[in-house]
Length: 161
Image 1 (cartoon, one colour):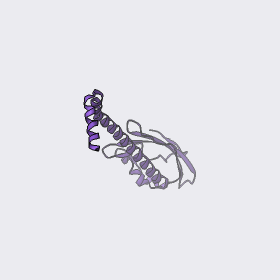
Image 2 (cartoon, rainbow, N blue to C red):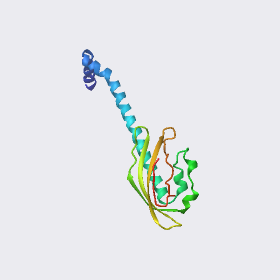
Image 3 (cartoon, rainbow, N blue to C red):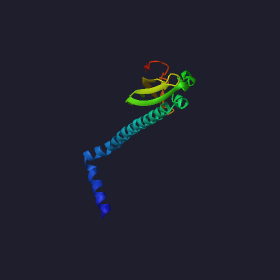
Image 4 (cartoon, rainbow, N blue to C red):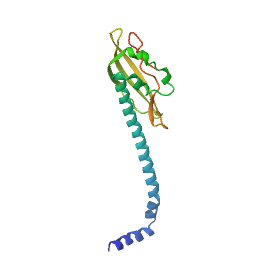
């Protein structure tokens, strides 16, 4: 009995132009919805990757693992990192002032405040670090383009690219 009901519904729709148009439009609607969903998933994965990268970088800086932090530098900025000079730095605080958000051009800017002590001076200092990150689509990774924080200023300072 159920098969006959289905047959009647199918044959009933054959004569109506609206039903035919609906059947023809259905694949197009499905394709559009799938593409929108895929774009959303792609953006979510970039956002999650950025959050994970920023968290890992924060931990590396906060606990003085500067060689690990240098691993987040873009290949073009890696040569500029002076890890030896950072042995004199002890970070005492790392506060995100402006969190990084993914921009349409696959970049993100984050502003942080870092409290630190130069071990040879034993004076608390502070700097504002403006970090510019770029997403590498091929490697599916975020790279820091602005380099490691500049702890060399004696009065604490601001690094802005």
